[in-house]
Image 1 (cartoon, rainbow, N blue to C red):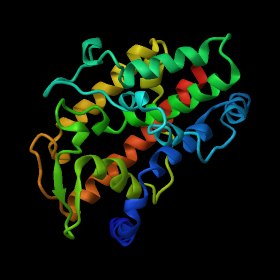
Image 2: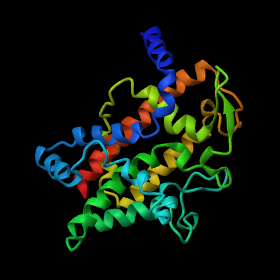
Image 3: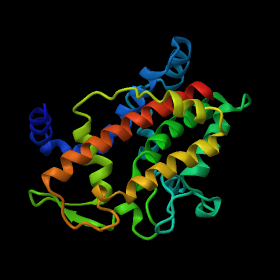
Image 4: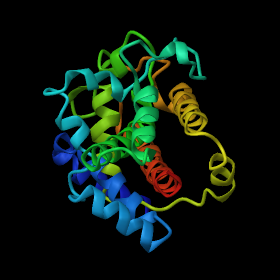
Length: 251
């Protein structure tokens, strides 16, 4: 089985560069499938209209609506694990944006077009929070300034590795709804702000793990790194999809 996984992953390497938007698309499609009631699922599907595009829309509009660019991430001081409101600049961050879009979505007075937009933002931002390099340290632009080399000589950076390459490998396998019965029970009685804070802390803790190589500022990664961290990327995608499904059921 391990050999089969290795074979599938490395035979698909040449396609990895085109996968930057696929993780969002796959996560959100899985989240809809994970919704527990058909009634809620149909409600969401009616709002999103295009199941293929709704979770990549937030990236597509960044050039036309540049004020939304900071909404995709938040930077914390090196070593900090816990998000504080002081970490969010006046022009916004992923936490303030996600909370605002949830509020817009929940407001019964929100026009239908704006509610549809809010849902697109929510789906995208939940995915971003579960990609650890969207909650990286101040100063390295989410790992974009941390350049490294893959085992075959390909030049990339940490953000690209975790935003597209590793998730791309992970998506050779269908995402699974995780059994988060205990975690979900605790989370689902919390406010959205507290839920998001938990997600950010988990991603921050992940960044500190030795196998990620972020703290050590790795300059190159080998095949073993890619294999082991593809598993991490797969878990994060499945986790994000599971949590997005729960959030959509609750709001």
